[in-house]
Image (cartoon, rainbow over all chains, first blue to last red; front, side, top):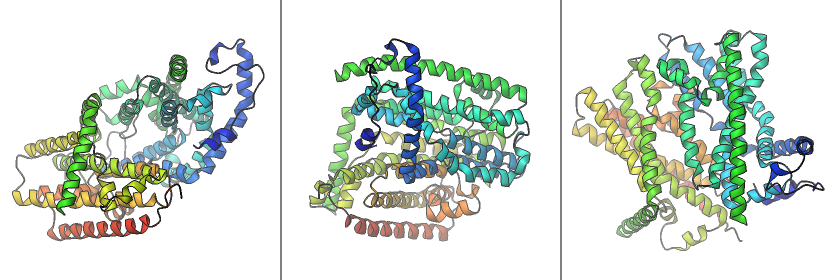
Amino acid sequence: MGDSTMVRRAPRVIPGAQSVGAPLRISGYLPRVLRTLRALPTMLRVGLAEAVAYRAEFLVWLLSTNMPLVMLALWSAVARDAPVGRFGQSDFTAYFLAALVVRLMTGAWVIWELTFEIRQGTLAFRLLRPVHPLITYACENLAAIPLRFVLSLPAVGALLFTVGGDHVTRDPLLLGLFPLTLLGAWLITFLAMSIVGALAFYVDSAGSVFEIWMGLFGVFSGYLVPLELFPGWVTALSRVLPFRYMLAFPVEMLIGMQTRQRALTELAVQWLFVVVLGSLAVGAWRLGLRRFAAFGG
Amino acid sequence: MRRYLRLLGIQLRASTAISLQYRVEFLGEGALAFFWSLWSLVPLLVVFGHRSAVAGWSFEEALVVMGWFTFMKGILEGAVNPSLTSVVDAIRKGTLDFVLLKPADAQFLVSTAKFEPWRVVDIAGALAIFVFAFHRMGRVPSPAHALAALTLLVCAAWTLYSLWILVVSAAFFVVKVDNLSFLFSSIFDAARWPVTVFRGAWRVVFTFVVPLALMTTYPALALLGRLEVRTAALAVAGAVAFGYLARLVWKRAIGHYTSASS
């Protein structure tokens, strides 16, 4: 991220806009929302252009999401003779290919940018814009999703070809809701990253806190092991943690392992997590920005 | 040769001194590394909770592979990764000039630039895993097997290092390779499983292209006394060839280095 991109993305100065050092204190809530909405299409377009411009780098990032394929190979070997729980070999194939697709589609990288920009002080550039920095970050990450989708098409193709239609849910309602679960999963990932990233306002190594988050994710999201195959108490515990709703829930819904009733309940829980994490993120930022101002000023 | 050993000693001391400066972080990272060694056992425990053997590997044998993985991860993150990450940075900023000016081999200097001593925790964790696995099997590895395993360990570390030199050499051509290192670590993660678990194309890739088999499965087989002599000889030859290739590529790549200011 060079400085040139900063210049290119410099926002139009809107008369009357105050510094976003205190974004939530501008009088009048509605004008602020309208202004943000008006800026959204441009920000998304710029984000997409950036993802396309750094496509080689982007591809390498996506290729490093290869864990589901490794776990697919492993679990297929385990299930070669007899199914594990209700998972046969083809169920594992469907599960981990769907996990790959979900993971590719819902990735975010805001934490690295955040900790870097807070430490280097370049966050100040973002604060000058009349849009909350969380929204600009979100746009940059969201804008890459079309490219992510294109690049995850091989996995989608493999899913449909190898295990066919039997392993994709037939319920039209659930199929229709699938993008919504993806959005929820992405939001949980993004908001959690923003909250952990806001720690960088206080401590130097927010990165290692995030490592712990990722470790918990590996186990409780069903990324390495389908959650059903854990002992019962782990499965129960995973239902009250956010990790399951970042991966296992969309995956299980897509490959038809959930009844409609269950899926709708879990969708509600997922969005409850989104709301809770969202308000936490806004709060953490409000506190953190105050401190950041103290740093620079 | 003696000169290089002394240099290595100096570099090691400097790294230790630096990391001892940040004592809290030192302890924290150590504790974290220990926690990760344990945490990474979770998938293994789940798999073997459902099956007594997978692809011909019993739980204890798979544990030995996991032990070697932990060991190699310690080497990778303690001795290989930190120095080479700083080379990439030096290439981008042009500060590699200072290294090239010194009257010692540049590859040696950049490879020993930085160590992270708290990764010793990983190696201790690996030893604990070995002890536990062999205790469960109710036997101890014979000295000959242990010696074979140690030889293969050296080969494995050498291969890992050579692979990394190849990645770093790429930095002379395409400046941004920090994400290549990320990709490499993510592929290396597959080494925690015995290579025979993988089939078809995967196995070919993990044996010959990115020789993960050489890094964890072969030393584990050697320690268990199941490795054929022929395979072991091939592994040693492979490691030597890999190191030679890496040296060649490094030599060529460094010829492409143009300082940032010129």
